[in-house]
Image (cartoon, rainbow, N blue to C red):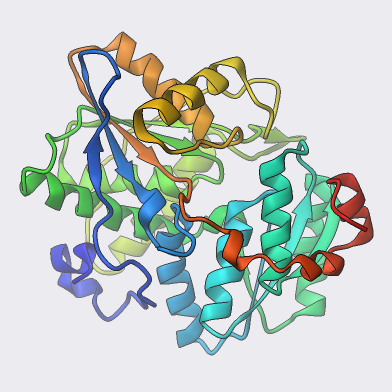
Length: 349
């Protein structure tokens, strides 16, 4: 049973779920991280083939798409978007086509890997270079070229994406109730397009926990005059969740969260010294890798908070897939990528 539906049976007819998770993701205490209690919620294990936090969102997104008879998803992100990879993979499993509209980010091996995966998974890829051109393409070009498609905002940030992480908070509550871990005093998670943070914060409010939740900003705050990743954009996601829940007569109390700005560094996808040190530490104590765009920065913040509040139970929500993606790659698929994209990210021409 979906945890959110168990808590609120009135939602059983409204949530259209295409099940992807086989069960709760584990929670483990991280050893070797000073004397205080540091726990990790391992959403890298949401799926055996391609895990990470996007899987939770896609359960409900694809459920709605299939319920509505949609045949294609159109979404956008940076060149190394994990959301794009996850959408391409799981949409294909659900017999849906995918169009991905991409903008530039710093070239790294992980970005090249994501591009190879997106091509191998059969996604239609449009390369628009800048974020502004990408958003315009998503808003104006996509409805003309694929008028019947479902358009999905970057990162899976929609009502379903937020609801998935309200459910994740209730899943965590079940694990606390079972004695798997103590109730966290503080939770830390990466935030880009905001749905993960908004959903977790809303879930904590519904649970009535005093737990503080911090989102570590890894995306640009503004695109020109438009807000991209700010407290206001997170609050917008919370407000959408509140309206959705009100339709089922579920009251969402006041939602509190904090947006940490200290780890962003020189820009989106640009590695930081703190992130590099955090990655080395994480590898040493867990055997898992972090990526320079999201998880290295968020875990660096978690380590900082651990030092600042040594007597608290701190939970780091790990969002990067740890599954080996190599079996998904088809070498010849790279030829399907736009030539300029292959050239800019040093892929074979």
